[in-house]
Image 1 (cartoon, rainbow, N blue to C red):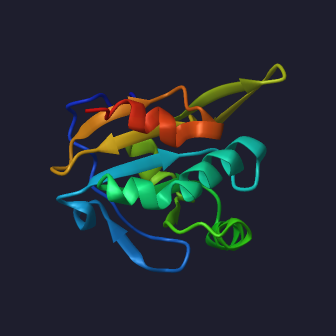
Image 2: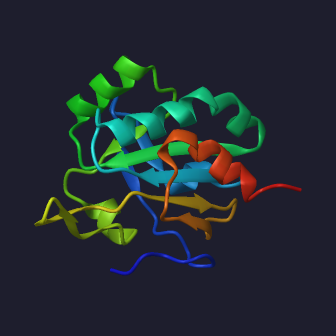
Length: 154
């Protein structure tokens, strides 16, 4: 599946977060959603990204954004990651890749000359009506909040 583009309807989802709470796209109707996909819990880039969003969580809420992170890590891994870094937002353990593939962020990657299948670090901003508003493919993990907010300057 190809990467979604601004104007596309966001694929609906219903999943359990790291604590077993049911989370659906429809829960965020009327609000903007930062729906971010990341490769792996407790890795340097993914930790920097999650902590940057955590550190700016209140400011993002004030601007009308909610946040959900998604990776293929297990529920246990997400719980450890959440507790270690005091993350205030849900993380979805998409171990069967259903959501990841429906958002077009799974495919071939290369590292150190090795090819493998993995998650493309991508953030979608989903608008109040469930449509893709912005897509970030080149995520600045250390200052992702500023990167997002720069697109929403008045």
